[in-house]
Length: 119
Image (cartoon, rainbow, N blue to C red; front, side, top):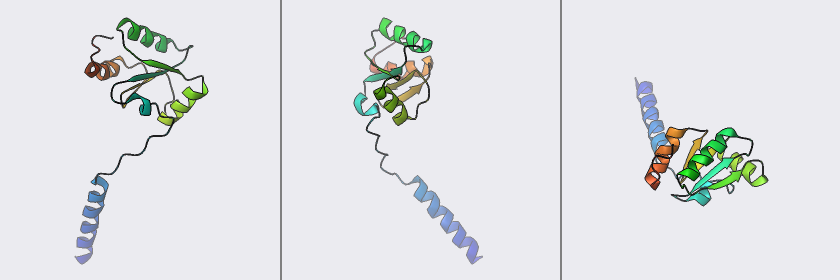
Protein backbone atom coordinates (compact mmCIF):
# COMPACT_ATOMS: atom_id res chain seq x y z
CA UNK A 1 0.00 0.00 0.00
CA UNK A 2 2.85 2.37 0.87
CA UNK A 3 4.46 1.74 -2.53
CA UNK A 4 1.20 2.61 -4.30
CA UNK A 5 1.02 5.97 -2.46
CA UNK A 6 4.63 6.73 -3.34
CA UNK A 7 4.01 5.94 -7.01
CA UNK A 8 0.90 8.12 -6.98
CA UNK A 9 2.84 10.99 -5.39
CA UNK A 10 5.61 10.65 -7.97
CA UNK A 11 3.06 10.65 -10.80
CA UNK A 12 1.40 13.81 -9.47
CA UNK A 13 4.76 15.57 -9.03
CA UNK A 14 5.88 14.49 -12.50
CA UNK A 15 2.66 15.79 -14.04
CA UNK A 16 2.96 19.09 -12.20
CA UNK A 17 6.58 19.46 -13.35
CA UNK A 18 5.54 18.81 -16.95
CA UNK A 19 2.79 21.46 -16.78
CA UNK A 20 4.88 24.06 -14.93
CA UNK A 21 5.37 27.17 -17.13
CA UNK A 22 8.83 27.54 -18.61
CA UNK A 23 10.57 30.25 -20.55
CA UNK A 24 10.08 29.85 -24.29
CA UNK A 25 13.08 28.55 -26.16
CA UNK A 26 15.22 31.23 -27.75
CA UNK A 27 14.92 31.51 -31.51
CA UNK A 28 17.87 30.60 -33.71
CA UNK A 29 19.68 33.72 -35.02
CA UNK A 30 18.64 32.84 -38.61
CA UNK A 31 14.94 32.44 -37.71
CA UNK A 32 12.88 34.99 -39.67
CA UNK A 33 10.52 35.41 -36.70
CA UNK A 34 13.20 37.60 -35.15
CA UNK A 35 12.55 40.16 -37.90
CA UNK A 36 8.75 39.90 -38.16
CA UNK A 37 7.72 41.10 -34.72
CA UNK A 38 3.96 40.86 -34.30
CA UNK A 39 2.79 42.11 -37.67
CA UNK A 40 5.37 41.72 -40.44
CA UNK A 41 5.34 39.01 -43.07
CA UNK A 42 8.18 37.01 -44.62
CA UNK A 43 7.51 34.47 -47.35
CA UNK A 44 10.13 31.85 -48.09
CA UNK A 45 9.75 31.02 -51.76
CA UNK A 46 11.52 29.81 -54.87
CA UNK A 47 11.31 31.08 -58.44
CA UNK A 48 10.54 27.56 -59.70
CA UNK A 49 7.57 27.10 -57.31
CA UNK A 50 4.14 27.52 -58.88
CA UNK A 51 2.34 27.78 -55.53
CA UNK A 52 4.79 30.49 -54.47
CA UNK A 53 3.96 32.52 -57.57
CA UNK A 54 0.23 31.99 -56.96
CA UNK A 55 0.54 33.19 -53.35
CA UNK A 56 2.68 36.17 -54.36
CA UNK A 57 0.09 37.20 -56.95
CA UNK A 58 -2.70 37.00 -54.34
CA UNK A 59 -0.60 39.07 -51.92
CA UNK A 60 0.13 41.68 -54.56
CA UNK A 61 -3.54 41.96 -55.63
CA UNK A 62 -4.55 42.45 -51.99
CA UNK A 63 -1.70 44.94 -51.32
CA UNK A 64 -0.21 42.71 -48.61
CA UNK A 65 3.11 44.10 -47.46
CA UNK A 66 5.61 41.27 -47.26
CA UNK A 67 9.21 40.33 -47.90
CA UNK A 68 10.28 37.41 -50.08
CA UNK A 69 13.22 35.31 -49.00
CA UNK A 70 14.51 33.08 -51.81
CA UNK A 71 15.26 29.60 -50.45
CA UNK A 72 17.86 29.09 -53.18
CA UNK A 73 20.11 31.67 -51.50
CA UNK A 74 22.30 30.99 -48.46
CA UNK A 75 20.15 33.35 -46.32
CA UNK A 76 16.97 31.55 -47.39
CA UNK A 77 18.47 28.13 -46.73
CA UNK A 78 19.53 29.18 -43.22
CA UNK A 79 16.05 30.56 -42.50
CA UNK A 80 14.42 27.33 -43.66
CA UNK A 81 16.73 25.27 -41.44
CA UNK A 82 16.05 27.54 -38.47
CA UNK A 83 12.30 27.00 -38.92
CA UNK A 84 12.65 23.29 -39.59
CA UNK A 85 10.78 23.88 -42.85
CA UNK A 86 11.15 21.49 -45.73
CA UNK A 87 8.97 22.95 -48.47
CA UNK A 88 7.84 26.18 -50.06
CA UNK A 89 6.00 28.35 -49.70
CA UNK A 90 6.61 28.79 -45.99
CA UNK A 91 5.18 32.03 -44.68
CA UNK A 92 5.93 33.72 -41.37
CA UNK A 93 3.16 36.07 -40.29
CA UNK A 94 4.14 37.74 -37.06
CA UNK A 95 5.26 34.81 -34.93
CA UNK A 96 3.10 32.24 -36.73
CA UNK A 97 4.41 29.91 -39.42
CA UNK A 98 2.16 28.71 -42.24
CA UNK A 99 3.63 25.78 -44.14
CA UNK A 100 2.60 25.26 -47.74
CA UNK A 101 -0.07 26.96 -49.81
CA UNK A 102 -2.75 26.77 -47.11
CA UNK A 103 -5.14 29.58 -48.04
CA UNK A 104 -7.41 29.11 -45.03
CA UNK A 105 -4.51 29.30 -42.57
CA UNK A 106 -2.97 32.24 -44.40
CA UNK A 107 -6.27 34.15 -44.42
CA UNK A 108 -6.87 33.50 -40.72
CA UNK A 109 -3.42 34.89 -39.85
CA UNK A 110 -3.74 37.87 -42.23
CA UNK A 111 -7.19 39.06 -41.08
CA UNK A 112 -6.04 40.34 -37.66
CA UNK A 113 -3.50 42.47 -39.57
CA UNK A 114 -6.31 44.08 -41.60
CA UNK A 115 -5.98 42.03 -44.79
CA UNK A 116 -9.42 40.75 -45.80
CA UNK A 117 -10.41 38.59 -48.77
CA UNK A 118 -6.85 37.86 -49.90
CA UNK A 119 -7.79 34.40 -51.17
